[in-house]
Amino acid sequence: MKIHGVGQVSISVSDVDRAVAFYRDVLEIPFLFQVPGSPGMAFFDCGGTRLYIVQPEDPDATPSASVVYFTVDSAQDAAEELKSKGIELGSEPHIIHQTDNYTLWMAFFRDPDGNLMAVMSEEGELMG
Image 1 (cartoon, helix red, strand yellow):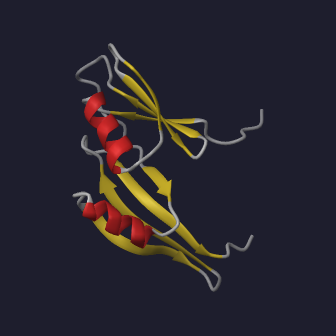
Image 2 (spheres, helix red, strand yellow):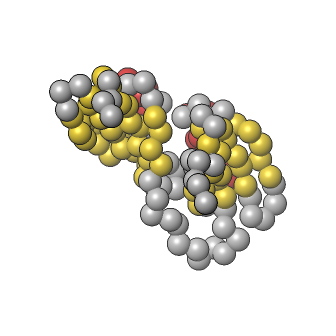
């Protein structure tokens, strides 16, 4: 078996329509399609990886503890844009890792269901 990458990431939400509005209109992730009914489902294209939004059939289902990290050109610019759209940051953009040639920046925020998200940018040349 050889894994070629991540094909899809799933996020549990309490209201699919509200989540679609957030991911499509606020984060501006390209919307693919929505499947009505129970469970409600919606799909987005994150640079070739599908983002799968689902409302669990079981109302007592525990949300996952996964974190979705969205790659952007500049975490600083993305954080400013998120704030301009009314998104409260859990942390301002900050350096996670740095070498002489490369800096990894991240800023954290939450979606309307409290799922932890981050914008991340890899600035400089990653040596490897």
